[in-house]
Image 1 (tube, rainbow, N blue to C red):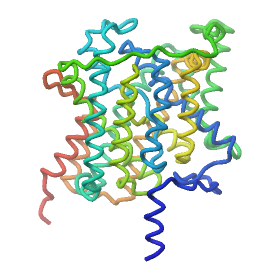
Image 2: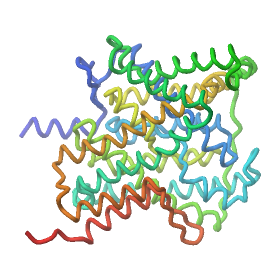
Image 3: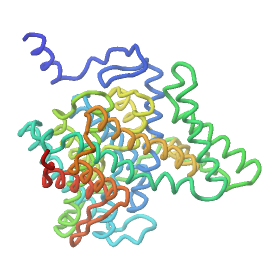
Image 4: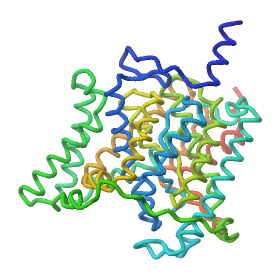
Length: 434
C-alpha cells in the first residue's frame, strides 16, 4: 500500500529525470547534458517551418510566433508537471477563421490583427475551461469514449491528413524530388547505422546533409534556386518582436472561439499517440494538457501571437529517436525563445530548402501514421468486426481527404471530422451477433 501511495504522491510533482541507460529515453528520464541540448535543437528545427508558416498565412509576425511557441511549451510543461512530452507551435486550425474575421488579403501585416487576437484569446479560454472540466470529472470516461480502435483511427488520420504537405514539398522540379528523397534516405541511414549518440539525431543530421548537397547543386552548379545566405548576414543578432494588444469584438469571438473544439481533438489524439509510443497511460494528464494548451493560447493571443497546439511534427521526432524525455522539450522551449529574440538564428533556419523540409515531413508524418498500427497491434484490435472496420475506415478517409465541414462561419477540418466520425460511429454501431 505504501509504495502505491508514494507513487501517486510522486506523480503530482515533477519527475526526477534520472539519467537514461538504454536506447529508449522515457518521459521521466534524461539524456546526457550536451546531447539533451542538441536533441532540443532538433525539435526546434522540426517545428520551425510550420510555426513560421502559419503566422505568415494570417499576417502575424513569425518571429513573435516562434518566441511564444517556446513560452507556450514551457507553460505547458509546468501545467502538466513535466509528465507529457509535447511541443506547442502555431495552430493551422485558426487560419481560415482568422482570415474570415479580419478580411486579410493574404500578403503583408494583417491590419485587423487586434480583432483576430481577441478571438484567439477567447478560444484559449474555452479550451482552458474544457481542461478544468476534464480534470474535475476524472479520466475514466475517456477510455470508454475512445477505446483503442477509435484512438488508433484518430492518430492515423492525423498522420494521413498531414501527408500531402510532405509530398507537396518534394514534388516540384527534378532537383526538389531528388533532394527530398536524399533527405529521407539520409535520415534513415543516420537512424540505422550511425554510432552512439549520433543515432539519436537523424533528423538534424539528415537536414544538414541534404542542405549542404542542395547548396552545392544550387549555389555551386546553378541547378536550382540558390540559398540566400545574405539574409543570415543581414539579420541582427537580437531584436524585440512587435507586440500587439487584442481587441474583443463579439462577431470575431463567435467566429474564432469554436476552434477550441478542434484543438481538443488534436491534443487528444497526440496524447493518445504518445501514450502508445511510451507504453504509459497518459489519460490522467489529459485535463492538464487541455488546460496548459488553453492557457498558452490565451497568453500568446494577449501579446500578438498565434493560437498554439501540440505539434505532430515533434511527435514524429520522438517516434524516430525513441527519446521522450520531457526535459528535452523544456530545453527546446528555451531554444525557441532565444530564436524568437534573434532574427539571425531565425533567418538561418529559414534558409533550409523547401525540399529538405518536405523530406523531413514525409518521415515525420509517416511515423505518426505508423504509431496507429502500434496501437492496433498492442491492443489486439479485431478488424474482423464490422463495427471496427467501418469506424477506422471512415475516419482514415475523412482525415486523408481533409474532409471539411462548414457550418456558417465555423470550419471543422479533416482531423476534427475524422475524430468526430470515429467516436460517433463506434458508439452508434453495434457488434454483429455471434
